[in-house]
Length: 203
Length: 203
DNA sequence: AATTTAGGTTAGTGGCTATTAACCGTGGTG
DNA sequence: CACCACGGTTAATAGCCACTAACCTAAATT
Image 1 (tube, chains in turn green, orange, blue, red):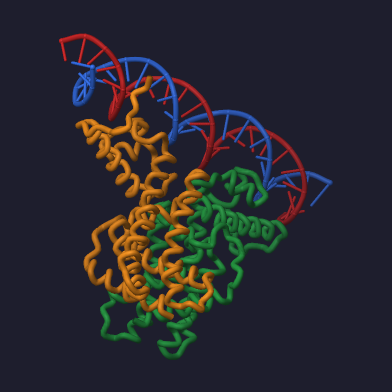
Image 2: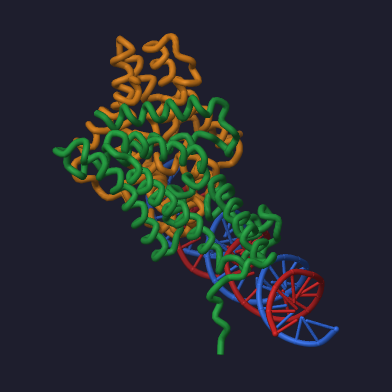
């Protein structure tokens, strides 16, 4: 008979393991953002997390699994976050403003992962790619639903394009913030992006 | 004594060579956009241009040279085009509108190259990367100069960020137009992007 | 305290791929 | 019409890299 691992015990080892896994994902976000998925070796990944080479296989089944964990994670965070934002807002206009703020926060605080998401999505295995695309689609629909409440007459196709364009606007700084250095006037940038996004979305 | 190849004769072969080179660059734009520079092999590249493998070396010194030709080409086209646009306009407001139209045209007609440019810039060799970055910087400055004429009091840092964000907005569709399929309502998309860009830039 | 399990390590190993070698037909040139 | 430069071909070559094997130590479990 097998021992069912129904409940994971919080032993010292499991904590260490979790934090190592997190370190690997952090390293992956940074390295993939800089050099692209195919430009990073498992050895690079391991040593950036303070461990060398094949130890990565104690945490992930392979290189694709690392990318998959990274991208499904960010997609879920975006979707869940946006649902929470919309649920907390009363009127659609406030909801849209909060969605913008949320996306700006996300883009500025997780620039690396944002970058990887639209750079290396195609490197995922078919199944994972579909999952991530589905999560992204649902996130997009949260925006489109909110936009539709504000412009009931607009076609959804148009609203979808609008949302895409706003994402491009907001996500632009990760592309330009080279290497992940700190941004001087972060608050100013945040405000500028919010204002521009608001102006663009209200046309 | 060497024969100086001062003037290239327009022989049948040289024409064939030029068109093969163009085919290779087209293939590179498409494949790099889809799979990323490191996800495409020389063999892939060649066969997509109707030639197999090492024949590529008759046209480029190596794989990096292909990427370099692609990216310096697009950067130069953008810079030259923007200079022409500004030179043709009289007042700054018209210039800005034309710059937007120009960038939208470019993003919609050369989506692949746009994608490669901000995806695989870091795969260039140091020297070429500096060249491309320099061209991009000069292109950005064309925008910033125009913006500065319209808002003489604004800091250039802020205007630079603004321009970046507008690029992100306009270049968003290449990211979303998966696989390079034709866009249904191209004119509508063009108009939408222009309107949104104009609204965003005028905050 | 004995034993098992898990996360690490350092050596392979095999496949892919950029680049080079060696060779070949032909358009352009004299 | 003889020659040759050139764009192509297929067959090495060499290096990188994902992944596996074999082994080792120490935390958990008993």
